[in-house]
Image (cartoon, rainbow, N blue to C red; front, side, top):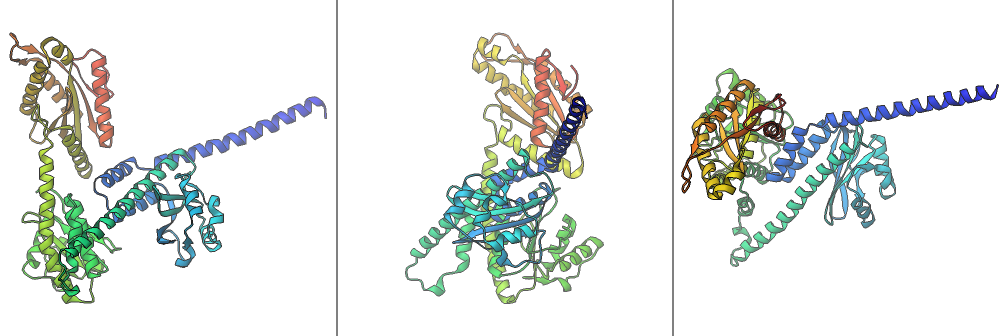
Length: 544
């Protein structure tokens, strides 16, 4: 073999090695992209929003597990939670044939130091020496190879051990998994503080009754004291159901209650029920409640329902293990139906039901009053329109409604083209006068179902349910013409002032599939309208 042949052979081997490395890299990149595509940003965004507003520990933990399974491709999960000086199995998914003792871990400061060093998902091998041989062998047996901690400040609340069928080493996976862990950590931390608060409140209440014997202290008083501080109606309902289940020791409890809106769908809460059931519609719910409202509770087997929907609902409840039902209204306007499984002490359950019915009305009324006061803070003081806070709330609600009924939704954002010039020439009071009059123009221009809001400064938004691209563009041009033809009267200014606006619009779901993306799309259309000459109306991605 000549030197030339050797060079050719080396070149061929090097080329082959490079091709193999390139193929591995491409395959890894594809797996990383698959990881990103598998994570539904809508679900993740909703998870973060609900946790920030009113997420309880049970609901947050459930959502974390759901996201790990559905969006993160985790087909095997073990979560050990710290209690006192040990970590024990709290939740598992995709594994079987094990003993709870397999996942017992003694807590140590050395383990805490390692976990505290990095909250991103890491290989289990990094903490092999800190796990018992039985624990580590169990993880290996199920192919679980990644862990991440649930840590807040100095408190370790637990550790997730997972196996995913997507690329766990990608930056996207690491960052989103860490975000889930931090959300759950915050929920545990809040619960920890609430427990301390409840303990102090209990001591305070007991100190006010020094002469009372143990038999005079009612356990339900402490339970309801915990619920008084909650100010969201949805949270109050969740906590009432959880508290009733804890007080009665029932295995399964379900609660179905009417929507606040007349055309809204009933909501169902399930606790300890593995088999899902169909939620009755408004008509069926009203029919069922009318049958049970005159008695403390009814046996489902003896409940005479009529119609295919009600019959199907009754079968579903019984199949889910629910045996009894009772009317459980939240208020005079919000009917509700409580169902539960067979209990060991029927008389005690009936007594608890009577107590909870009475207290629930007051708790819910307090929460509704708080929300009504909060809604009063949704008004912009200058224009009388809704403010940005209300705008975000309604946009989220309307997008959920559009998704549910598979309908279009339009959003337009516009601002005045030369408000700064007006302020500089005639003073800021002149600019405020124009903004006030703009509110009047908008109120006369929109439909009854539309929502208008002052977004901030000289920017305004209009949410338009059931509006497609053609309708949106037609409205934008009509609004543009209306403002162009309006003479704004300013006190102290001799002549009326004319104004123009630039408008951007976007339509759900064509241009965006969630509220943040829809705002971005409409904002980009507005920016393009201003950059290409102002006094224009453009839809997202529309050519000037």
